[in-house]
Length: 275
Image (cartoon, rainbow, N blue to C red; front, top):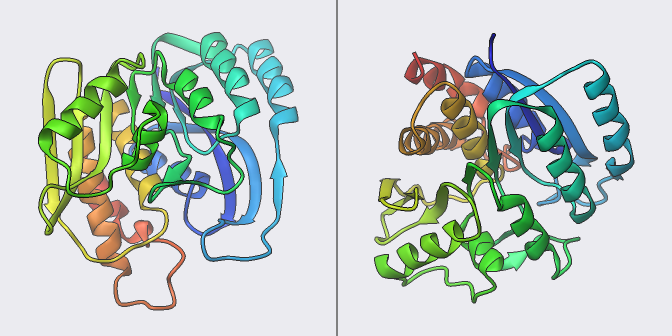
């Protein structure tokens, strides 16, 4: 039986993020991709104004009931931007529709650059920690890691000891593996750190000095697809980082394309790497 992944996150109709990234990227990895939208927005919230927003929490229980009636199950779950009220429902969906050995991949989307995203209460990180508990992989950035642990955000000037202590604390939340993104010990490098409870593995790319929206979703989606294709966690983390770099390179030079990265141009690279 071919593998089927369910991704649970918002649809920002325009903006190359969330489900409009996850569906094509994971599909390009050769994995059947089912979706459960947590909300629908006309655009993403970074740079656009006056966007529409519709919460879809009230639909989730009936969707789950229909899936159970049809005996629909999944080999993997990948969560992104969700709300506090949705987390108990998502845990139930994972419990009641999982095939044997199903992977649980959690991108705890809630914060960046030292701040929670608009709309999230101070209580949200503790709820997200409940979703992280028992996950096969969690993928926080440095800000999300700090909020999950209830500690002060440190965005630069940290040491390897600091990062590895953070990895151990994140692991102790109950996840089986941690992939910490946005790690940098030198000005010209940017990468990730993986921890499985025993070993820390780093992977770095040369830093491209630009800021582009949606790269976190590109990373998490390609990671999930690669992991479902049989890559190890360090291999999937490295491939995802390389794919983000290729997506950024495909976007640079187009000043009108400020709202996301042209990951579509880099999909052939991703597919070739997965052969």
